[in-house]
Length: 332
Ligand code: ATP
Ligand code: MG
Image (cartoon, rainbow, N blue to C red):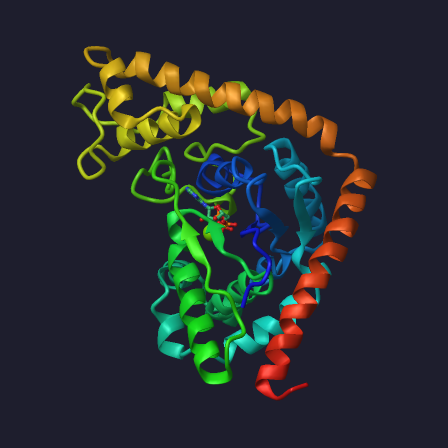
């Protein structure tokens, strides 16, 4: 379906809380290092944020915070189209279309649905949680995306997107590009420091096991120094038996671009105290850099201008893809 040679990369984040170290290492960093090579799109998935009820004022603030954080993390609005999902109305219609390509069984099998629906209270499970994967497929397919850098938790949704694109193309003729997922070899699933069998989630809110990119540096250091480990005292990567230490090794490796074996060698014969201090130093250096840049970018007028420009550019492509899908379906 593609006639332009430059490959397309896209990723997004839900404005469901402050961005975490997991969001940065799993998705944003991998996007930023590749943004010059691809035609790049990054968006704030605010439609995904309302899959559960949200305070509207808080949501608007969270959207602006997320964009300022993207910029602080190195997203360059000159290179990359930065936009808010709800500004491009095509996402809603395409989400609707993709939902109808999906089987109930496929959605029930999604790990994120199974995990998150367990925590939903007595009011029942929100339909939004059930049908958000085909909306995510729409987000990806609208831009003829080739590559989606995400954390491991989202791999299944990108794979579903491929299946839906194939299904649609087979039923209605060649319409969508099939995207590949990009999962970073290290840092693709950063775990909660206090509960290193669970993923670090921004929507968990403030807690000692989650590093937020805006955490005060002293607090971030304290969180690393008090991370749960084990009694072996050997810095060795073993996710099954040493999830806490393995998580800290992954964090250090992903920040410094070192390989895991090199880190194990560097800390051979040294205790956990030394190792944790090195991880805390790397995390604090990263956070200090992002936080300094964040201060420059949090001007609402600048952010609004970036979003307006991003939406305008995104809409052109989204509209073209949606028209193609509508023609294929007999809706146009
Ligand atoms: P929520 O709790 O709202 O689901 P989240 O922290 O899981 O928040 P998302 O907005 O769902 O963040 O995902 C944004 C991107 O960050 C996705 O690409 C996701 O795979 C990635 N990501 C999220 N958490 C982690 C993590 N702990 N480690 C690595 N990547 C992560
Ligand atoms: Mg998530």
